[in-house]
Length: 218
Image 1: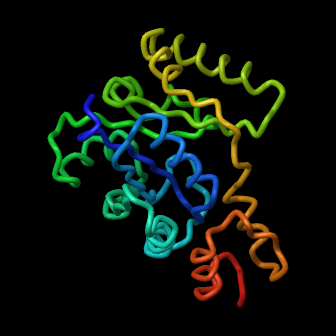
Image 2: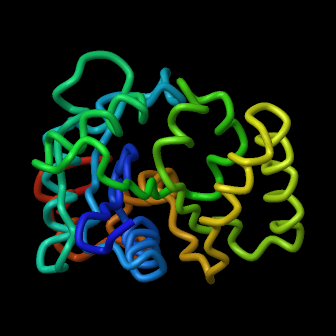
Image 3: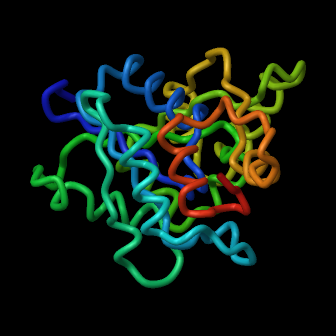
């Protein structure tokens, strides 16, 4: 895996993008020496079928604002262009051509540790983990039993997909101080003008208020 061609892929709803997302991307970039980290907002998450997301164009615009000026951070609308739920394996397969890179370019898939529970059940999970190097950023927020919980998830991955893939996930685990930011929490607090929104990049907060997203007002 050469540094020149390695690319990080960071998918998610980004509804809205916040400091925790940016922290995860920076941590992955530094730990795996990634020259490029590509943010890909989902059209519709298969894990959140009952929730309406902010319009894709707005989430894409907020990502551009949040990543502007950060060398190596890019934003692509690959999943917004596809119909139906956004499956990571489809994005992984489409990413090299979208970036003008060889089909076998090494891809580091950036994940939060909260997705480990259920990762083995993702669409074509075995093919996905064979193709990418997972980079799992701790999101346990300092829970006392966080490490034990992670090991339990890895044990389940080993049971369903085999120990080699579980070891691959473990090799990409980053035990770093987390940034306890949550899109769900931010959406609940944004309607109040006096809400604590330090977890939002200033340009993103201004965009949210200017467009009346999540019930926010100027």
